[in-house]
Structures are given as C-alpha cells and as structure tokens.
Amino acid sequence: MNTEQKQEKLLFAERPEWSDVDPIPQYETSTPIAPILYTPQYKDATDYFRAIVKSGERSERVLQLTEELIRLNPAHYTAWQYRYETLLALSSSLQTELELMNELAIKYLKTYQVWHHRRLLITLLRTPQPELQFIETCLRVDSKNYHTWSYRQWLLSHFVDDDDLWRGELEFIENVIGDDVRNNSAWHHRYFVVFGCGVRSGSEDRARIVRRELIFTKQNISLAPNNPSAWNYLRGILDYNRLPYSLCTRFVKPYTLPLDPNTVDIVDLENPPPSRGAELPCVYAIEFLADIHEKAGDKDNILKGVDLWKSLANEHDTIRKKYWEHRIREALQSAT
Image 1 (cartoon, rainbow, N blue to C red):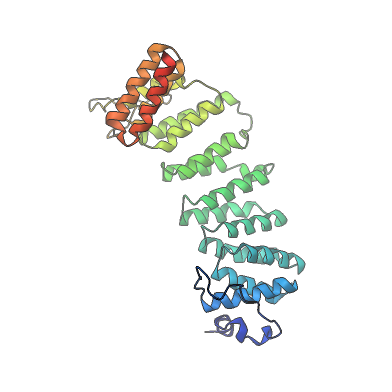
Image 2 (cartoon, rainbow, N blue to C red):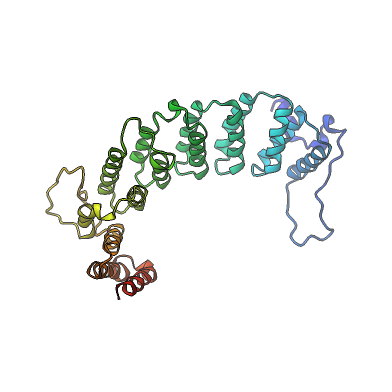
C-alpha cells in the first residue's frame, strides 16, 4: 500500500493537514426516530465537508475531500456542485477532471449526478467528439442504461450544428439495434435522431426518409414479430408524419394470423412476411389492425376492431383483459 492509499484509509480527523478545521456533525436529536447508520468514514467525511462549505474554502484539499466523499456516496449532489465550483475557482484542469470522470461514470453508471457533472465539463471544454467513443464504452457495460442514452442525446442536441458529431449516428444506431433488436432505448434513440431533433439527412426529402424508416422497421418486425419496441416505432413514424395507420394494413395482416408452415419465403422490402419460426399471431399486430379499423370511423370497421379486441381479451392477451374490455366499451359507444 503506497502513501496515498494509506492516507485515504485515515479518517480526516486523523490527518494532520486537516487539524485546522473543526468538523460540523449532522444535526440530530438525542433520540432520532429513524437513525441512519452511517459508516465512520462517511460520517467523518461529511462532518468535514459541512465545515468547508460553511467557511467557503476552495482549495486542492477540498477537491480531495469531495472526491473521497463522492466515492463513498456518488449521489451526494451537494458534494458534486461544490466540487465543480471549486474546480472553476482554482482554474483546475477540466481535462484532468474529465479523465477522473471516465472512471467514475463507468463505476457509478446509474448515478445521475456523475452524468450531470460530465455535462458541465463538456459544456466548458467543448470537445464533444471523443464523448461518442466513451459512450459506446459505457453501453458495452450496460446497453440499456437510461443515463448513458440521455447523455448521448444531450450531447447531440447541445452541439446540434456539429455535422461531424452527427455524421455516423444513424449507422451507429443501426448497429446497436442489429446487436439487440429488443433494445427499447436504441429504438427511442433512433426516433430522436431521425425525428425528435429534426430531420438531419442531408439532401433526402421527407418522403424518402419515411420510406426508409418504414422499410427498416418492417424488416426488424419480420425478424422478431413480438418485439413491442419496433411496433411502437412504426406507430411513431406514422404519427409524427401524420400518416394513416391503414398504409400498413397489407403488412400487418399476416402477423395477426397463425403462422402457415407452408409459406414460401418472399423477398418484399415494403411488406416483409413473418420469418420462419415466428410466434404468431402477434398481439401487437392484432392491436395495430384493430386501431386501423377503429380509425376508419364507420360502424362496420369499428365492429371488426371490437372482434380483434375480444380475441386479445379472451385468448391472446388475457393479462390485459380489463384494458381490452375498456377499449371495446368505448368503441361500441362511439358506434351507436
């Protein structure tokens, strides 16, 4: 164990360089209702942290204290904020701080504060490009982590005019979905890239983009029909562009029926059939087709939708039986 490691094992109360600070204990009554059993290390660090906040000290030792406190409790947002303000007050190297964050972000991947701190650093450093590779490293640890995906979207939107930053984004997300077609976070990010942050596809017109997205989504549905992420994305394409669901009627219908083992493989980019071995009928397809009928508005179509919802309630999706019965009641009321 080196000298620095030995130093970290000592309580701050045992370190000579902190002897000039009077620690401030947490205020508690003599008989707290729900006492928290802090470790001696955490209690010691927070007592000294209160003292330096009260005095307003900004120094290198404050950076050491806040780092150790954050390692004990990475969700301590006041420690993060005080650390950031101290970095600025000392004109410390933000690049060095970012390198420390590379370690802490992966170690505390699900802690919001570490990502917020990183945003503050990159806002000042204005070096977004290397962040893409760092994010990919984090996604290899947890491919669906909410904070990692949120950070990537923040990065792209904050530096929205950086064409180099955006250039490979569609290819990146296609690879992620290719690795795991059921990664809902990846599908959400694709929507953000294509529609949510404005269409950034160069000279492509909207009609071409919509066609591309429909083909991509349908092909992925054909590979894994019972994947709600892709069906939700299909709805998102149509809703965003104010297109009728009925445009997908021909595609959807085969997925609402039992799989025909004698079906011949057909290459159809616009309306790819279910893949061999698909588990059909698909709940999401039945729901989609029922919505197509309901949106048609006439009585005959509404009754067709009701029949589909009944099949969901009584056979294919009984866990949501009450919900489908609710849809049926509403539809029948509108049809009278």
